[in-house]
Length: 413
Image (cartoon, rainbow, N blue to C red):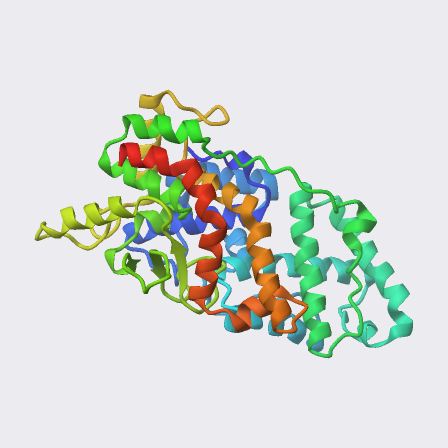
């Protein structure tokens, strides 16, 4: 069972909803793009989810859906609770840019909307005004406006709980003010120094356990061919559980152009936090195992093209959790006092990625400098195509991933 106690804030609930509940809704013939589950269904299947929402956030499922913007295509827009139209337009324009121009997924935009609504309504209550824009166009008002923002976060400080949650709220607010500056609607960012002012600039401690290298090897030792492939997709490639379960042969590019690396391709908008352009994941280990698996399935007349077939498509994430629970029991592996979970495999890979992130950013910065840009993210977005970004990631990650996983996967796949 999921350990909801480890969820920091509504972001974690939203991510769980996307990765675990959405596939289950599809299995139950509910369209998650238009509908949310009934209370009875959610309580029956995810009672811990319902109880934790109530206990930690004082939210019903319906209030949670409203807070994070579910379903992704609601019939009516969410109210901001403000009576100043220019401020509301500034908020909506920012979220529209995130979704339309930057290609952020609904499960990213929804929590961002929720945090901003909490901030602006708190600002309204603390400062007795819904107008957050006018002071931003007057340099002489800057000291007072910084104080108003500080007073707002003083209230939020007592309500947000963890340091990780506070940093996420500050990030959402600072990014909105930055958007207003870039659009000529503000002369300064009144939240620029909030982290320092409140001492929130230290690194938060996340309790998100991952599989160790020894855990992965122990699980592989007792796994069958299908379970080993699932472990490869999660820990070896860093796929999210739902992505691994729904991986289709049409997404595989095993023989790319010369100089490129084999990869998985996702259509625009399929991956959380991916831009609207097509998004890829490099296959740095286990390529031969993928070829062999495809060849074995290809001989079956009823194969549906999924690498982990289910009854009506790909395997469900609930099945993946059962597999991991069984693997943990057979291999005598537990993580943080509980059975291993599929998402712990992705975390294993992601921790390697974070170790190499400085090298990836250094390569991007070099491209930015050659283009005369001071912002590597702008350079990456404007000057590097997906193949170049893929190659940069692969170059930085290859040795580390292979050192961690190549030998054990090669022994068992």
